[in-house]
Length: 159
Image 1 (tube, rainbow, N blue to C red):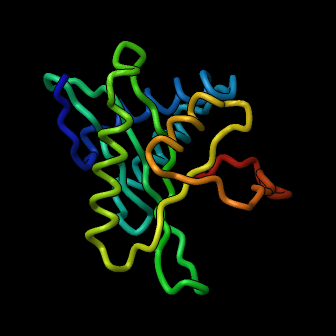
Image 2: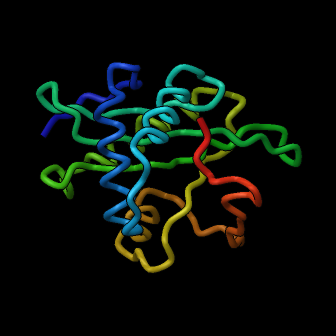
């Protein structure tokens, strides 16, 4: 099956909102606030400093998505690209959509001399995804992820 991979635009907003909503439910059983999600994705699509989405299409239909955000490393003098919000529509899973999205991002990262690495995080119990990532050449890093969200006094829904 052939897919087209491209950078998302504001025209993709409805599909990206849908993909993220379903992703949150499937992966964490969370229901996201639609208005906040729409604003968040719209703001990202409007500001390339925040990151960018790639989408996979088949016959003009969105079938997958991947978000890239940026982290600068002063220790390594370069940028990590963080892979986030990966979602492949159920009827297109296990046919290489994620692999092609990943390979597209990897090629772009390699072509950019400021990018020093790719990173992502995965649920500890999602062994299937972990096997996929290892098969693509990613390695487990020696870090645990900690966070605080929402911050005290904040609802976490930013407008």
